Length: 376
Ligand code: XIL
Image 1 (cartoon, helix red, strand yellow):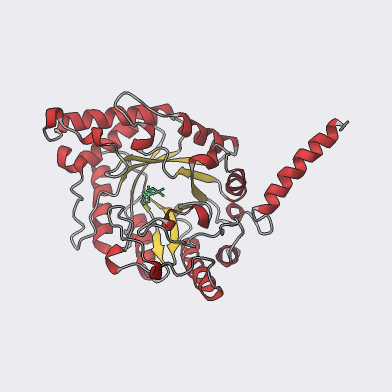
Image 2 (image 1 turned 45 degrees about the vertical axis):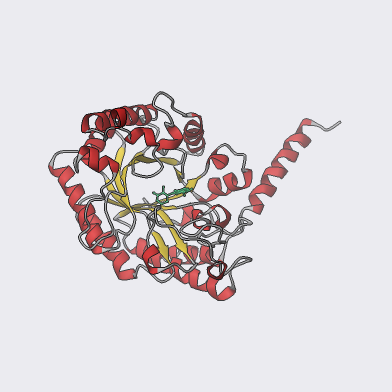
């Protein structure tokens, strides 16, 4: 018969083996981050429900903030008018609280991953302003209200700006039904539902000057109207070759100069080729699978590992330089096997965008980030 201690040691042994398997050889990334800058990861439902125990252990070891990759999006949490699906989000918040992590909400008002009923008008007519605002208010009150005091900050509005030379407003269904002040309304509703929560505007390609100028104008306008807004999130879906360091630095300094926090909210580095028109993270822009663009189906060769490592070292050197301005850096995913870039913008490819590989082992890019941050 096993003695109780043996059982305890046995369990501990298994737990230790699991930790060893998830990159315990290097420091925990959160411990090498500059003071005051959180390190986050976008996590999946199977991770927070600990069905994927190895990835959950990796998150626990390296990150002090989590963002739900999908499970708080409208289609996931509020699939039908009278039905909310809170169980996965409850698990996310509990996972974060048990580990003393900062939990971020993503996202309240977006054109994507929102069910068709939200945008349907009465009896086949176009959606009217009043109905759109009522649905938005009800959704925000229910979702933000449920996690009041537990979710630290929300991506209130996601991707409201076009990629054109004017930085024009995206003519989303929200914008068309309500007008440009749908943004102000979303922030007001969110503030009403949790007065303590931080509220962010989030978008990709803010490294492009016109888009960034509009994001800053939006935030200044909110502030001028006395509406709470705490930060701007640059998603940070970047490539090996771009955006340039100068454009990333301008993004950080311009946002900070607007008087709000700078957040890098969805960081990853795509190592695969894209057509020029596919730059960014517009979910509507997708291309068909072409085997000749799936360059590294087995593993990333050493020269490309080194290039990825240099790219991550460069961007983390900028984060370090501007540590007073940046309050959080969140990776969009935990390890390469889980990254959305295996499916975007071209489905069926094998991408290598993050710091941990498919076996959850730290890559040269991880070493480069640690080395860069240790120079602080
Ligand atoms: C992505 C998820 O990672 C995918 O799993 C999902 O299929 C599509 O959305 N910008 C955002 C994120 O704000 O919510 C998107 O996440 C990636 C682009």
